[in-house]
View 1 (cartoon, rainbow, N blue to C red):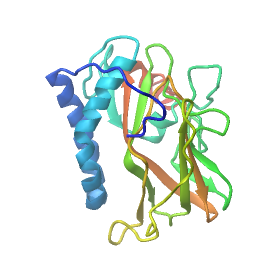
View 2: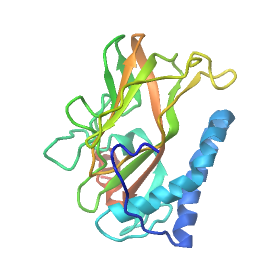
View 3: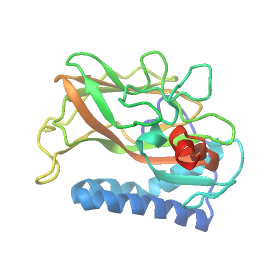
View 4: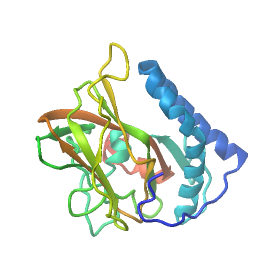
Length: 250
């Protein structure tokens, strides 16, 4: 796990029903991944119980005590795999607001959200953060979120790998330098599919209290589909307030 300068986390033990809900969310997402890449799913599967622990940490981190279910119900907590909408939850993040979903991912409008990242060789880009501020989960009352990227959960899909170095820092700690990526990264992890897995220093937690920065240093220019695999824990109202969801339900 990448602690990023944190010494401890608060933790609240989940009930058996809550554990089942987190397991269900994890298993359903993992099954979809397994349909595409059995090798990638096999790498992620051992982190299943760790995500139950992270759910307990998220529950203790959010200001109000609520319970997990899957799918989430009004007044409760939800858990699901990271999607562009859950990751880039605000189309207009602001340092002075509780919506600090800063990132360089393309397509950051209410109508168009992707995990595409336009890269220029030798120029730093941000999977999390923007060079001035780190990425935080949503800090709005009743809409809190907590992102946890899986260990080795940054995956390039459908495009050839362009990143050889990454750097992981937080508001609390920035002492570590860039780390080199897998030396055989240019070899796909799955037969007949372009799937390339980047290494990370551990699971990467991103709550609403501490900003996290993930820098990538590309050696090749172009647009890459760089997907952060992992889970998001959130309060029910977090999703219902999203621009795209609001537009669809209006």
